[in-house]
Every structure is written in C-alpha cells, then in structure tokens.
Image (tube, rainbow, N blue to C red; front, side, top):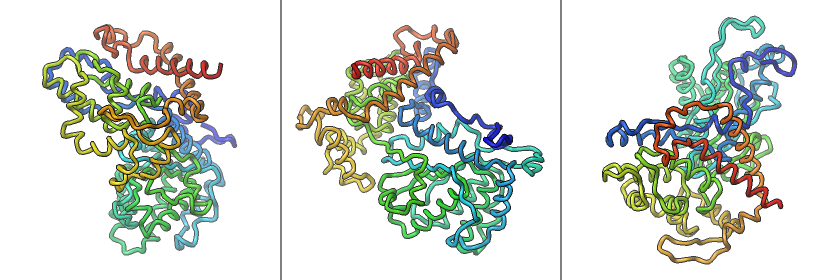
Length: 491
C-alpha cells in the first residue's frame, strides 16, 4: 500500500484497508447456526446452541454506517502516519522527547486528518456488538520484520485497543486499565513497569500517549461512557484534554456510551468537538413495528437464528415482537432464545405466539417489563423512573416522529398521528433507502459470485425452512422491496 507521496506504507500493507462500503453488509453479517444439521441433534444439544445467539449479528443501515466510519478513521490515520516518511520520523523523535506537563501541550504538531467517532445509545441497542463486529475484520496486532525505510528492526503495530471507562470516573484507574489492555494485546509489561511509580496522573497520561503513538495505535475504543463516570465526573475536562491530545497525535478515538454521558459535549470548544469529527451516531429502539430496520432486517434476520426443526409460526411477527421488546435489540435476542428453549422443553417442532408470550412473562424478561411498556406506549412519564435513560430526548423524538402514545397490548388506543404517515413524508427516509439500495446491489453481485456454494448443505434442509434460502437471501429480498418502494415514492 503506497500513500499519496508514493512511499510504501507498512502500517497498511498487512491490513485489508480500505474496505469498500458495498462489501460491509456481507462482511458484518454473522450466522453461527449457518447450515447446522439440527436434525441430528437432541433437544438438549439444541438448547445448548441457544447460547450462540449473542454472536448472531444482522447488520442494519446504522450499523454499516458506524463500521464504515471506524474503518475509514483507522485507514486515514495510518495514511498520515507512514513511518517511512521523513516528516513522520521527525514526529516520532518529538514524541520520544515529550517530558513536560500534559496540560501545557504535547509535541509541536497536530495531525490533520484524524477522525474520531462517538456512538450514543441506551443499554441493549448493540453499540458494542457493532464495534466488535467491525474490529473483528482487522487483526489487533501486526508484527513487522526489519525495515530500513521505516527505521526499525522489529515493530509491533497495535491496530486497535478497547478500554472501559472506570465506573467512578477515576483517571488513574482508567490509565492503569490502559496499561493492562496494551499489555494483553502486545505481550508487554507496561503495567508492571509503571503501576508502582508514584507519578502524578498527568505523567501517566504522557506515558500512555507515548506508548500508543510509538506502537502505531490505529484506534483507541473507550466504552461505558456514563453520566456517573463522565458527564458528572469532576475529572471530565482533564479526560477530554487527554483524548484531544491523543487525537492531535493522529490516534483516532471511538467513544461509546449512554447519551447522558455525552450531555453538554457540544458546549465545549471546537477542538473538543473534534472528538466527533468522524461521525456522531445515535442508536434508538425501533419507533414502531413498521420501523424499516426492525420489520425488514432485525426481525427476519433474528428469526433466522432457529434451533427448532421447523421455522417459527408467528402471526404478525414484527408487531408481536415489538410489543414484547419495545424495539430493543437485546430484549429481542433474549426473548427469541427463551421462546425456543420453552418450545424445546415442550417437545414442539417450532415456536408459536404463545411461546413468545410465555417467554415475555418469564424470569429473563420480567424485570424489564416497565421499560418495555414505556417504550411501546411512548410514555415519557414512565421513562423518568429510569435514571440512565434520557426520557426528555425520547419524548422529543416521539413527538417529532408522530406523537406520544400508541396502541397498547390490551387494546386501548392513545390518539396520536400515524407513525407510518410521518415516515412516508420524512426527508430523512431517502438516505436510508439509498444505503439499502447499495447494500442490495452488493448482495446481488455477491450471490452471483458465490455460485452454488453450500448448495449441498442447503438441500439437506426442509424446503419450508428459511435457512434453505439463507439469511442473505432473505435480506436480499427485503432490500429489493425497499428499492421498489423508493421508486414508487419518486413517481
């Protein structure tokens, strides 16, 4: 891989970057039960397979956009940090001599093309899963041999590293976790070297920054940003300065957490807002059973995770599953796994509406009933009992997308503007369909290239089992449907 100055870039030579946007749906899709010959397995063995639902991943348009933003950030960062360039070698020298206070500024340069990403959403929407699937496309570490042009005899390249924000917002605790996660990836002993030193916190910040820079970190991913450990923590300003210094060195930052943890983020200076320069993404539960991602991707995609001998026999699946989950991805996965477990214990060949309703009333979902009902009913007042949910933001979104209140499971109807009509007139609708159309075209080409691959395994499945067509085929049909809707809307 050569950069725009014609020099071979060893940081990119061993990575599958850049990634074509149109290939991302296929790359991100994960089907752990693909073509499992379940007919040979006992009910107990099938029950054990339900644990794999956590690795079953159906990419939505938002997930694909997030993955693209992260991969582009890593690629752009490495393009600017080609170690064979004289300018970059000079920067490495400056970073090596960095000894001063962290607040007083770092080395005398600022990376121009660094991209940072923020991902916000309440618990259960799959934020971490999306990022994990994205990072799984890349090795975490690349070991380079001798390179005269890069000026090393051996170099470990840390492509990405993930660290959780400490629960209490402790800066020192966070930095100690940084040492530990770097050690776990590279096989180094930085934690042993530095944890016992009685350094001020800012000296540890300089130390961590130098390590990340010298091992060519492609992305620092920070999870569990919460109100209690970030938005309200007294150390927030210092931590933001730390992240900004890393960004100035050319290291992309990915911040993941609860919306309440990011409150007031945009109130900071333009330099701090640089931490969203690569994209600010907001994840929300499905608005209604007719939500595009919900009805045409998540529900059919998750129903493909099926350990039963026959496909689900569910009436109006998108609507029933919405009422039982509030449109939350995590609740959907748990509900489907529990329903299949109940069906296996009952000696059934497939799951029915009754199994879903029984799973909803089971121990796994019961604790979340209040939250689910508040989401289904669009009840802002009911959401206020949850300290980690931005109820006002939900209320604003619901009003903008059709009003508060909806049809309740018991049949009571709270008047509101029809959500479907609002979606039809929404100007934000078409970009999502443009993404879906690109995904659709890519999948058509992919299916043609694949030819008859795996056809023998498919033929062993009963014809009524959707796995005989494959999840890719199911999603392909939905992309085609969305494309046709778009064309009708234009005419």
